[in-house]
Length: 321
Image 1: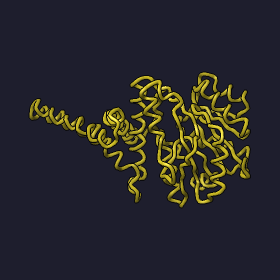
Image 2 (image 1 turned 90 degrees about the horizontal axis):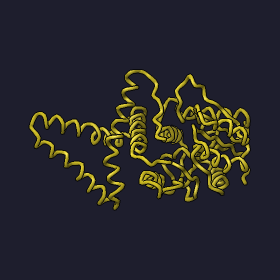
Image 3 (image 1 turned 180 degrees about the vertical axis):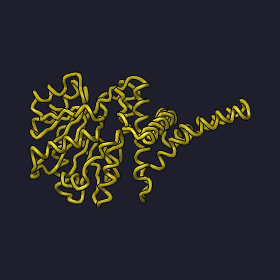
Image 4 (image 1 turned 90 degrees about the vertical axis):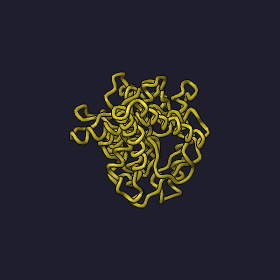
């Protein structure tokens, strides 16, 4: 399939049959597969071991994060297989599409300036809920060189080691933060026009979507706090939008109603006007509505980040499943 040696790191927590499907798409092709379990209660770790994966159980005394799981998986992979050149990271709720591993490893082999390559992640059941459909739209990023990747991506092991991997403490947005540090070192990230993984969000309730969107707001705030002063102003614009639409504007409307009376509620017309503007630009009334509503969840996620930061405590993962 390729001259360079490939390894895989899968992370998961209580993924059950989704994890089984994930490992079945990997283990026959890549025996050097490590599964990192973040405290599953459904026996996922035992199932992965029986299927032939090397299993790492995260220490329960430290907060779980996807970043920490990937780092510990990478560490174990390179301990067991020090000759690995490329590492495919996969979330445990994803199935790797046949042909992706060969295409991605070939790209990295032919493009030594690139540290990361990703492809098209699709939602397995986009028709089952509006929230799954929104996820599928989110995964459809532009083809070509990119600023970042998602949780599923193939990376050059030497580049990862040079920047000391993911930032353990990040509970969301760890991939863009890693990619920024890689790009600062001169590496490039690429999105291939190739099917990569099938993801199973299993989102059927508004509350799940809300929590997932809160996680995005947390990621924006964390990224801006860490790298907002960098030349590209990492996620500063996204964070300011979350603060304005999700926190500052509704707070200002509430204060204005107390001071000036109920007529001040007309200021809330800014939200339907924003929806009209976004719908006109994107052509999707549905997506635009969720973009507007999502700013409230993002704002709460940003508040969560700064609250834990100011209190000096470790953030806990925001789970939506």
